[in-house]
Image 1: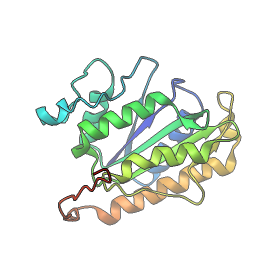
Image 2: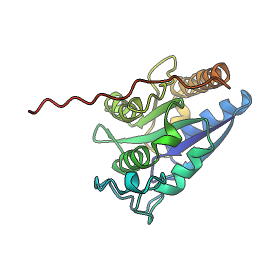
Image 3: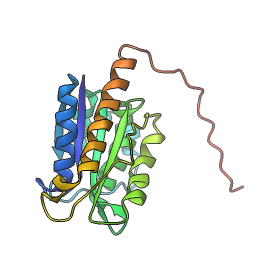
Image 4: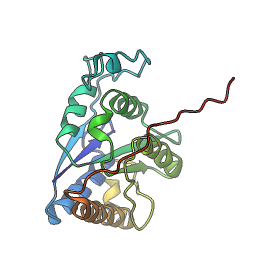
Length: 204
């Protein structure tokens, strides 16, 4: 089994990476492989609702000039997902939101039904709002949200400061254990069979 971790910070070795590394190490002790994919510093397009990915039915966004399709492809062969982001103005990094929205819309088949956890890293405040925002999209794809002993939050401002957040790092390790438990408990089990969707609009 393998978990894909997305570092949603432009700082490759910052506090978000530190938190994700703590998770990856804990997963390894549980016998679960992992890979950390970095969002980097290059631009990531936002979704323009062209729906061409649906028309082409190839699980790829038509915009192929950023990391979106490459990370979606990684998810095809992974069993779970963890997304970490720094907190900017009480929200996740806008780049990671653009990435998540396009990946789930164009390649939802690779994500649907797989366990997911999100991590917010902040200096002081705004982490709970950012964490709620990160969790929202995955609930639309029947992805079980993996929790921990506390909200999945780590504190730190300067690079490396998160190492001093003992409770935050423990929260990451506990979440990793819960992720490993859920993966083992559901290994080989068929996905639930759902009713056809019945979208209801309230504008008549």
